[in-house]
Image (cartoon, rainbow, N blue to C red; front, side, top):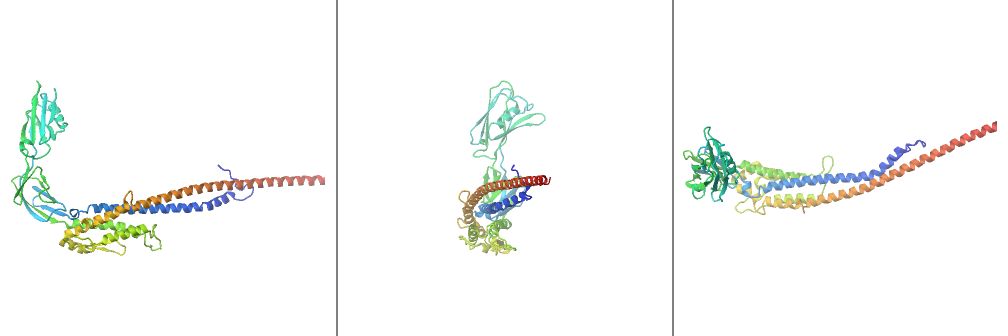
Length: 452
């Protein structure tokens, strides 16, 4: 630690003088640090804008097909028999559906064993599920009924095995994992048994439930599928067959879900406005005359202008007269943000829902493709304009950091020099005072000797 004389001999507050001189020397450093703070604020703003742009692109990626913008609801007259749901690719209508039978998976059961710990005769069983390759399960000497069930479950065959204990007997039951069949029902699950052991009991598996496909009559046409969830009879309509007791008939009504569509449009508006508000804030002064940290920045101005152009440019659609957001009730305010006129949007959805969807989903010219391409241009992790801008700010920050480090060293050297100079001053003053004292003492002694 450097010794400071502290004005012991001079009477000066040298420590305070040094601190003030060093503080003056540090002013340029503080100015550079303020520039660093500004850069950090700019980087934070660019990061916030990039994040908002990414959110907008993510939302639009879920609106780049008509079926992703449109929405429908499906109502069943009896949900205990048949449940239905509809996606955006469905069509409004009322469908009459009779449930003939549900799909079922084949089950095979062994003969009765005394318990789950009863020994099974050694050998093997070969399990063939549909057209899959056969899987052989070895039954080793001494394996119990529970051991065989475990071995089947570990075999990789598309079945599940369980031991069912009735209290008086135990049974091994094998369940095919998939319902229904292709070709012949009895081929859904084929099990061949082979035994070589001399002790234990054979499984003697027999079919207890035959595989069955789901069957419905859809508007007079018989439809058969392997599963109880049927998704490919009418585009966009999913049917879940729940009960076939008495072969009941159910009506399914598909209606347009305007509230969901409006929610998606509002979601776009919110995401778009978030970006525009961040950008617009950099081009206006607040009530006190203050400006944003990137006030008037040309890159942000270009982004804002291109976003507004993308939102306002007409979309050409075949079969629809809807070409602009304004036609569906989206209006631009003085700050560039969009607002929704619910009455106009409701009317557009009632008259031409596909046209509304097409504004976003039309290939190449729709808002989804148009804005997604623009967002990518600015946010791409390799060549994005905002990414390159942030990298430039990083470089500026590092350069300032190097300048500050060099200036800090100069200030430190300057402070050491001041300490040395003031210490020397105190030393000289100390020596002068000592000489003064010595002269005064000599003068007093000389005067006394003359008087004596």
